[in-house]
Length: 401
Ligand SMILES: Cc1cc2nc3c(=O)[nH]c(=O)nc-3n(C[C@H](O)[C@H](O)[C@H](O)COP(=O)(O)OP(=O)(O)OC[C@H]3O[C@@H](n4cnc5c(N)ncnc54)[C@H](O)[C@@H]3O)c2cc1C
Image 1 (cartoon, rainbow, N blue to C red):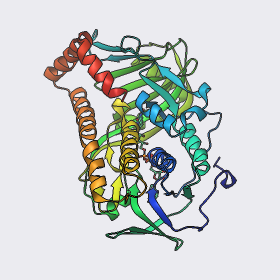
Image 2 (image 1 turned 30 degrees about the vertical axis):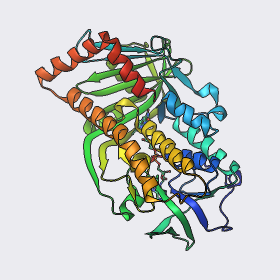
Image 3 (image 1 turned 90 degrees about the vertical axis):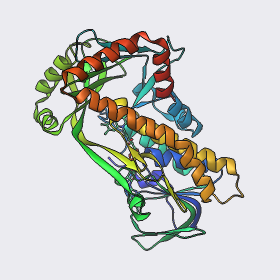
């Protein structure tokens, strides 16, 4: 089912001039539009697809949203509109290595937090955002629409759509995902490395209660995570070599449930498939610049990391939060495409993005290696970290940002 166009107030051609045109209305682009729209900027969101409406069926694409991202979405007016019955708090995390007794645990209570993360469905979040966009008077949704040409001039940018419409703005934001068209048009280089892995996702009902715990196993065969959903349900993200992913996708529901029950050591008892498996290819991307004259990149257009830390969209929300902060702080009279403002955004985001890329890539290599020395080291590392309160607090501070 697709969102009906009557639910949205589409751009009808009344105005061609905007402060900011956001290309890509995914989670990051839509959140940025709401933040900028609420700050009084005149914003257009250009998106080729209408999002799918939520349904009774649980979405296999689930996000672990950090408390920091939740606060940002709240400031965008989104958080309170989400269906509470489809959200689950993570109060505890248990991470296992590939040797017995190597375990690392995090607890929200010990860290003085209400939760470590909030698990919710991609489709529900996307749909809630898209319902909110037309309610902000200075946001225009241009969808479905396809981009044809992008011109970045000294004083303004011009976007030509395939249907011939021309939109102008002070600033173009590329929020169009990992294969960003905007990034390509701006000539920004990207370094891509395929992991040769796929993330297999599926939802299960469980025999035992998960007690609001997120489980993760760093196995030689890949990284397996079971994230808690409301009631006795969990969502799986299993990052495995592409051939193994294809094998998992070919299993019957019973075979898949048995396989995941075994791999997870039966922590939540026997599993039953609730939402069938789907898979996403994994890669790491390093983008040479986050900005160009009259242009900024956010979300997966700006960085792509392994999902083992569940941080990709959180990183994107932090881009959106920072860009909205920089542009909002500069005031309505300032040129929001000013290069020095964009440099502030780029500088502010550099460290967080580099740290997340390094951490996820290193963990992926460390736990993917067959070397006995590395095996000892990684399991030793888990056990030692578990006893270091200071280190654990550092990790938590970064994960909840
Ligand atoms: C299996 C898996 C699990 C994950 N789990 C987590 C998690 O738990 N927590 C977390 O933080 N992250 C997670 N991630 C990462 C997360 O999915 C991404 O970081 C996030 O979806 C990026 O959002 P985005 O809005 O930047 O890009 P996208 O979601 O890719 O959205 C891009 C948008 O741009 C549109 N678009 C594309 N091309 C054009 C064009 N030419 N013109 C206009 N619009 C265009 C698309 O239609 C789309 O709407 C996971 C990723 C995977 C693969």
